[in-house]
Length: 139
Image 1 (tube, helix red, strand yellow):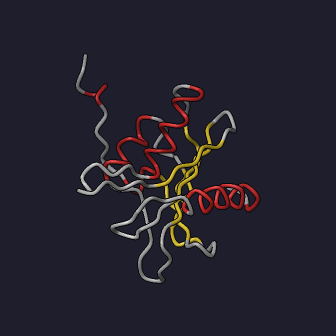
Image 2 (image 1 turned 45 degrees about the horizontal axis):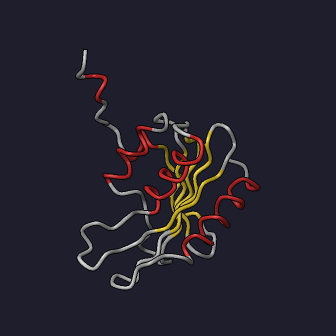
């Protein structure tokens, strides 16, 4: 991903992060995805009181994409969370599986601090090396 595209996605994710509804954990996450069509969708996390139905930022992005233009292929993802030199946010296992439904294993994933420092650059295959694909089991 070139620097201009990263900046555009990072800025969108950072802005979404500012809208996080995380009164319990205080763990604010913003995400931005770009589709093969070039459209960008953003999302943030939203907690509930029990923390068992929290909407993740990546899920919010995908729901927005599907709601607006249907199923599309995601080509890039930038995630921004609370900054820490030792800890950075990557998509959880649930989100990795959901991302697989909308992207090839070559999906580029970037995790950045709120200051814009890239802490991780990986592909979905790197983060999910042995994915579950339903088509492998249904004939």
